[in-house]
Image (tube, rainbow, N blue to C red):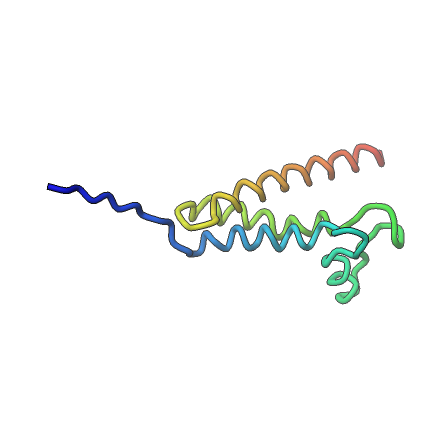
Length: 111
């Protein structure tokens, strides 16, 4: 008698949104080369400043990206059986902790 092993793959579901939100947060935050980051363009379009002092100072888009990273972490944690959920959870968790550390360091430097 032959035994056939079936490997179950993960399905795309709500947890896959975790990786998508994480990638949007990365695109929103980081600069690629000498070009503006997408977050700067979006914030200027809305009418918010992307920098604390004109074109220099504290880059606010780093802190706005937490809006994407925290839900990505929560969704990845809840729906961990979906494709991309674990990667989204790990990356967004790491970047959230990194951004909080940057925020705390910035606050300490200004006090």
